[in-house]
Length: 173
Image 1 (cartoon, rainbow, N blue to C red):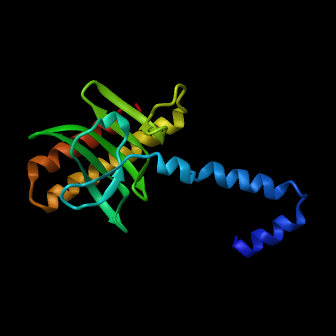
Image 2: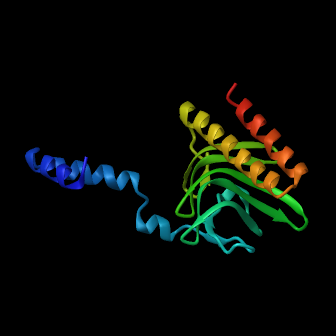
Image 3: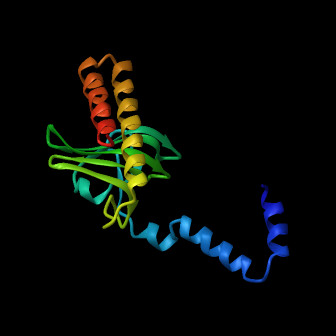
């Protein structure tokens, strides 16, 4: 449906319809105030900007994935580095530099779900379908990272991320 058709249809509805539509649109789009409260980071190498989930903690964080208009976009991985060691990682989907859904791989387990209140999977009572979707998208992101390393002829890293993708998929079994 085009915007014009939607507007004509709304004019035919009772006076409350535009208010309901505005509420729906504002519910699904992060407010400017909420976006202003987010802590933006930048990949030290590519200079791609993003918001890292709070559970990654602070430190140099790198993005592997598409960078559209200077912001992390699509499926990929945010990986924190602790000196010469790999730290926690987020595997999932980003939109305009902000995580949408995915999994944070911590040393003591996973946080899975949608991004809200600055982190992934922080909801007290997560929706089971959301958890399934988060692990599915995270597995796809891990496979994409593995393919990137395979294209760079880094067989060890490619194998690691392919195995991780399988592990992420098994979380829903």
